[in-house]
Length: 153
Image 1 (cartoon, rainbow, N blue to C red):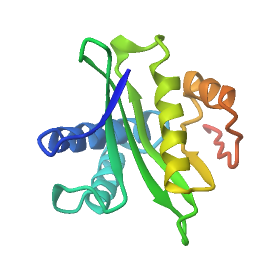
Image 2: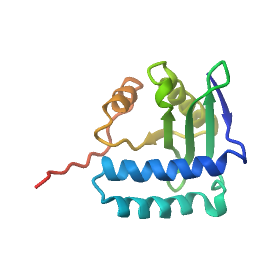
Image 3: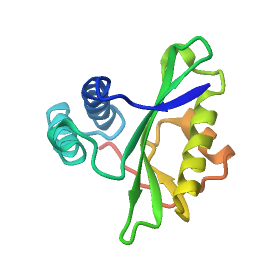
């Protein structure tokens, strides 16, 4: 797998895709009504991508296989004040590429990036229903730091 920074030409498509997928996840897995999930996703996207650009310190990477086909993406940034933690805002393996170790390789790249930048910790958010991702993260040594639960009435 090869990992490279996203290009300026790719960034608008990435922003649109990430905003749509995040809204869908907030709706499907977070329980928000779809219109509210879209509104929140649009607000957060505008915050993190002012004028369609990356916030300083944030980096998006594109992962390709040996044939040059896109297999995933990774969005990393500092978090906290002072920024002693790095945060994975987005990690995605293309559906057709899943099950080939790309998710693990992207997570290892996130840890490497974080160490090279001097961060003490690496964190992320995962929706509770995403058991495949949760299992991957736990196998890499991540521990649960927070848990929200709900009961449908």
